[in-house]
Image (tube, rainbow, N blue to C red; front, side, top):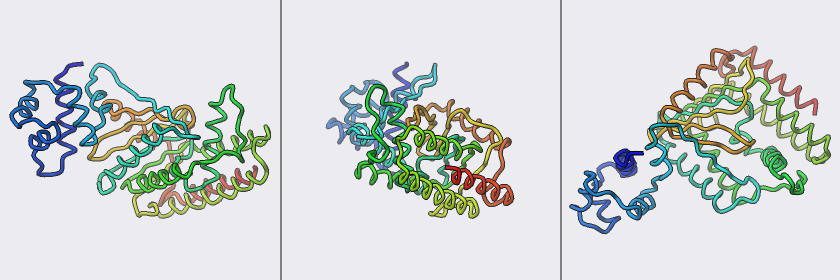
Length: 320
């Protein structure tokens, strides 16, 4: 990795974080407690920034060093796996959640912000407002990750209040994105229904909890259908919903704004692997949008297909 690439990326990130009209040299002089001439030598690349100086700048301006390093790697794509605990979160996990919310707030007012996904699982931000469904997703994650540990029954699975508060901000942030495109596996609800039936058979979900899950699934279907009819979410931002004629092996997502570009892969049920690599982003976005050719648009148009799709989802929930 060439040092000049990292230097240039660091300068780009500093410039991006500074408010309009701010003097970079004066700002760095204050952060580093050095004279402006010393700062200019660093900006020109004559003197390298020390590790301590880079850390001070990153902390003060809120720059992600991971993104700086990733963007400096030119001979290979880099994904970063976020190993988050969705039950009993660590401080590290809360920090990750806060960073996600912070980034979403940065693009709230961006008229060109955009998110797209091709998915075989219902998006988390659509499930979070439904407490029982949100708990079920975490319960399933725990069941698949507990290995030799005892499985906590569904009725004992709880989401910490601190995490719930952060997730409400996260949902608001996603809803603030100006244009969202969903391309869904047509079995997206069937997969969740099958999961619920499985845990019923192994007696890890009580009948009263199943009733709550069904009630919330019906409510979720109603809400998504309302969004599909309007073509907008609760905040009035554009939402396109496609139903694919093919099945997807996992969930791919891209997010784009004037602040940057991000690619995400869903792994291990709820975890994500992310990349800020431009080439990956371009390939992933192209792939997701190409799937529209294999799909039916059910938001704002395709009324007959929309009615049939949501009728089918309600029939699936009836079968639980």
